[in-house]
Each structure stands twice: as C-alpha cells, then as structure tokens.
Image (cartoon, rainbow, N blue to C red):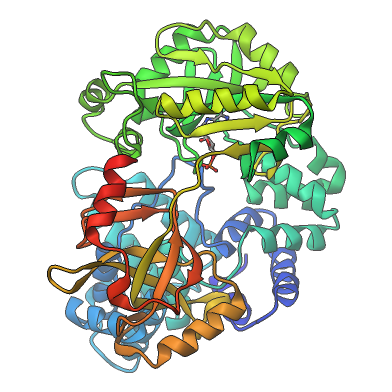
Length: 561
Ligand code: AMP
C-alpha cells in the first residue's frame, strides 16, 4: 500500500521541475513505484482528475463546499478561509496553511479528535472517499460530502491536505497533462509512445492504458480497442486558408456542410443509447429526443456514430449556439427544454459497426456503411456529401451552406482513416474569416505550472464612449507564446493597480487585437457579452484604450452573426 504522503511528495517535486523531460522521468518513477491497484488511480490523480473525463462519476464539489470542509477541519471560520484564499490565491496553499496553523495548536474539532489516531492515509483510501462523495445525491448530500472531505483533511498532513484540496476540484496545478503521462507510461513500462497514444485514443482512459502496459507490455496495449459506452476522442479539423489550396492538396475531396451546432458521439448498443459531447461528457439524459430518434432510425444492432446536433428556427435557419448549449447542459426539466429547442441531427461518420472497428477504413467506406444503417427520417439524416475536384462546385456548396445560415464547409480526404483526437490535414474546414476586435486589457491572472511568475491570462474589455468606462468581455490566454508572455508580464507589471491572490487589476493602457469564433450574450461580464474561443492576434501598440472597439460595434456584430 502506498501512502498518499508519497503521492504528495512526488507532486511537490514535480511542481518545481521546469523541464518536461525531467517531469516525465519523475512521473514514470511514480507509476513504477505503486502497485497494480493503485496504478490507474495514480495515473488519473497525477493529471488532476479523479475519474476519467467521460465517466458518469462526478465529485460535484464546488468551492463553497470545499471551503466549508476546510473551515471545519481546520477549526477556523469560513471568513478566515476566504481571506487565506485571497492571500495565497490557491486552494492547495490555503488548505496547507489552514491545517498548519491548526497543528500549531489552534482549535481542534471533536471530529478531528475522533480520528486523531487513525493510520497514515493511503492513496486508495483517498480514492475511496472521493468515490463515496461521487455517489451521494439528494437531501443531506452536502453534509455527507463535507464529512468525507473533513475526514480526508484531518487524516492527512498539511502538505497532503493541499493536494487533496486541489484534487477535490480536479485542478492539481503541477503542470502534468496527457502528453507527459503518455510519455511516462511509455518509459515506465517500455512500450513505444505511438502504441500508448493509440491505446489512449481508443479507450480514453490513461489508467487502463497504464495498467495494461505494465501487465502485458506492447502486446496487450495493442489489443486495447473501442468499447461501446466508452467515448473515443473526436477527429478534429484544421483551417484551410482557401478552397483552392484544399482541393489542390486532396485532388478529389468529399465536401459536406459544416453545420452550426454541437458535436455528438452516439453509442448504440441494441436499444441502449449513450450520447457524448465534444468534451466527451455523457449528455444522454439531456437529449431524450436524440436518443429516441437514434433508436428509431439507426438500424444497426451496435454502432458508434459521429454527428452534429443543431436547432433551427421557424424559417429553418440554425439557432444561436447558446440555445444548443442550453440543451446539452440541461439536467432538470429536460422535456420542456426539448420541446422549446428541438434538435436536428446530421450524421457524418461511423467508427464502429456491429462489433467491428472501422477506424482504419477509408472515409468512403465508413460513409457507405453509415448510409446503409440510417433511415433518413424526422430529425435524423446522414449529411449530404459531394465528391468533387471542381473548385467552382465547392464554392457553390460553400455559398449554399452560408446562405442556409450554417458555418461553412468541411473538405475531407475520402481515403482517410478516422484519427481520434487528431487535428490533421484529412479534415479541413472553411468558414468566413471573422473580423477581429481590438480590446483593452484591464486585468490579468498569475499563471501556474509552466506559467508560474508570468501573467497567464488577461481580462479584456470593450469601450463605452458614452460613459468612458471599459466593460468586461472575458479573458484570453491562448495565442501567446512563452517569449511574448515574458514581454507582456514585464509590460503589465508596471500597470498593476491592485493584486488580490492570483487576480491582478491593471491600468487600462494596452490594446489587444483578438480573434474569436463568435460573440455570445453573457451575464458574467458587465458588457453583457463574451467571446467564444478568443485568441491573441496582435498587441496593438498603435492604439490607445479609447480607440478600442466600442460596445456598439460588439452589438452590431452580434446581431449580424
Ligand atoms: P471547429 O469546431 O471549428 O474546430 O470545427 C470542427 C467542428 O465542426 C466539429 O467538431 C463538428 O462539431 C463541426 N461539424 C459540423 N459539421 C461537420 C461535418 N460535416 N463534419 C465534421 N464536423 C462537422
């Protein structure tokens, strides 16, 4: 049995390692040191997750619940916990400090005295407690969750408590992601990286891959395959600058509309249907209309289908993305929302059929099989596809898609396999170039992991000339390379107004040119809008804050989207 202490120590060491090679080495060591039962748990823990992303098990621990558990465990008030959070800017450090203070002789709760003599906490015990937490629901569940967390905090050292607190909100902040764990599994159990990667693509479960690699090496890892009800990563698309480029590249291309909706991966196992979102969350309960449509119109006994769900208005045009998200996020009163926002499903791929994995078959073959097992009826259809090498024809399809209110087109290589999780040249997307926005940076957040000591994300605002105020529109953290990050941190260090924990308020001086996918309405920001997928394009040194884009322009773009 490995103690949680060992895991916490490994995290502490990894946190301070700057380079990913050394980090991989340390993670590989940890994976080798634990036993087979602990291995899957540690593999998930080290990436900051308790269960695989697709699992229906969910901790459901929000910050307020965590603060409450900490306050009880440390015997200090909630106010004190909140003030520690403001000082440290980090839940892990807060937990460590709170419990440190307590062990220096502060108040002991009766609960903690009760478990004072318990033995050292093991990794599996932490996992079991988290499992208990994920199982409780309904009345009294908050209290049970708090008690379980309190138990964990009181059974661990202040240092361990820090990592338990971070795991509880599944944000370990030690900079270990999928890539490092993949390489570490390869190193620890002597399986070449591409095999580990492929096994992960098919199973989406690093814990399972790690155990299989340890037990059976490359031979067993190769046998890992798709399974119904366990989502595989979705194949992704790259942007093509022009239709001509794409057609030149592929010669004959398969052209489809790029529907304006949300991705769904559908698993059919007889009458049992499971739906996964793009983030591979199980959304079956939220989409009963899709479930019954698939039951009725997909004739295969078992299948994994890929498609896009969207909603249309009375005139047949796609409704705003947020409307669809409302459907995907809805957990209660699902039927009413389903009536208000009925969904349409366009299927474009089939990766598994009646027990056979079709991933390596060419798109044309997968598609023929798809057409063969779907009755185009009601809200379910196989999307139309045109095989062509004629740029004119592709342009025509592109314009039709845009006129219908959809996003553009997909240009796919008809000979290509389905590559889970890959954003490659076999699927290209063409949509109109979005305008960029010039927005003022009014705040920032200190980064963590590799971005410690740098500002990691920046709060953006548009300008309201009427009031002279800058109105928030969200944050940007992508599109910024390390060199730029260092430069920006230096520039902004001189503009700090107030710092509170990780949050920084900045004097509005710098203007960023921001690319984005879409403007959405939002109640989170005082502009009333937020950007979907914002990305830094340029720092507009040539612009002063009052030349930034105005709220009026944002409203105009929003209304024409
Ligand atoms: P993007 O989200 O811009 O990277 O574009 C890729 C997304 O377009 C996919 O994840 C799907 O959700 C969506 N999409 C819409 N229509 C299609 C289609 N015919 N083939 C593949 N993806 C599509």
